[in-house]
Image 1 (cartoon, rainbow, N blue to C red):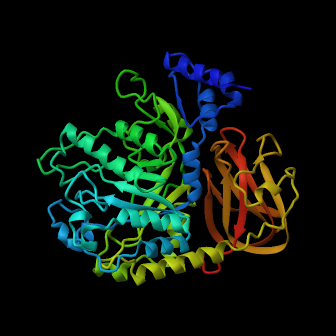
Image 2 (image 1 turned 135 degrees about the vertical axis):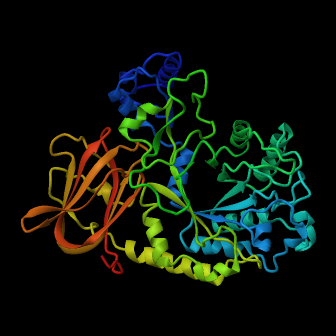
Image 3 (image 1 turned 45 degrees about the vertical axis):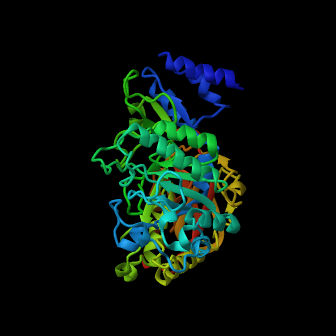
Length: 510
């Protein structure tokens, strides 16, 4: 058994330029979500280390949400813009029927478990009565300047049992200090207000936008100071996506990668004095939009390995803020279902934006799409066709795969006859959707799998894939059979398969 002292000394030796001991990490009793790597580590040791990196408690909670909601609302709602310039009159902000509870309930009814409000967008207009600027709701006619949108959203989330988060744009096109050291103090003050006045905050969301402010200068963001402040005030919160806990998937389409690793290399290889990453809470660096980020061949490309999962963001409309002209362009329930399969179903968390209109309400178009989307997903996943299946291969421990608990698992040894699970469906079943989950509390390990069905006295491939991670969903042409088999063809260490399911999407035209 490895104690804290052993692990700390392993990390210390690595920082001093010594190779990681493969023995020290073979059991990995004290698992970490961030490990500094020495250039002399062997490929096998590197793969072993990657296989044992796990999410922090904050990251695990975030991953298990699966669906989160974004609410873009502010001065842009009333000007028709996407990016305001910070010059619009605060008096333009005047929703006539604002109901944050309607927003949060519509999200919850759709299965969304956490909501993030744009407390401040690039224009600098603040949705709470901040002391840091006059450019806020306190100088709007809404509720005679006594209103607080952030409070109303936080209160609705608390009432309905939904997680609460805030988006705070680092770029501020209104504040006169932007472009100077003083602005970093302003951000700390704004974060202090947001993180001390509204109860528990579960996610703090930054983007990387960095344009000119009113003085024509760009700002050097003191992200590490902001991160430390958030950790102090709301230690349970994840910091995304220009943050150290959650990264941006790389597009705003809602479609993640076919091969999505949560463990990725970070920092700049072999530059220990300049640009390296030797601590976890540093801003994202480099282009992380490649088709694959954490394959075996890429693990050596950083100074450290980090559990750094992907958030997949998309808006239910073409724009992020409400525009009446887009009322008939709301994404259909069918397309939202595809997005779900290509985000949550590709080891990500979906961040779906639903923007309130000028009244301060979700439009009927958006609410209807959310409702039908939820009904579609519920219909697909209501009946796991494996629930009464019987194990017929060498692997007999299938109960953990069918108990609906992502914290239980079967640990494959990957030795001969222990890399596959066969199941008798007790009669012919018809299906076209496969669900797989790893217990990521153990790590992400599966590199390649094949799912097969029995037909004409032989196994035939239904579908196959690379990574699983927290959840993998695959669709394929409809199959009817009485026997199926999952083979794990490649893994970094013993795969801990947590869940397996077969479902039938009756509306699938394949």
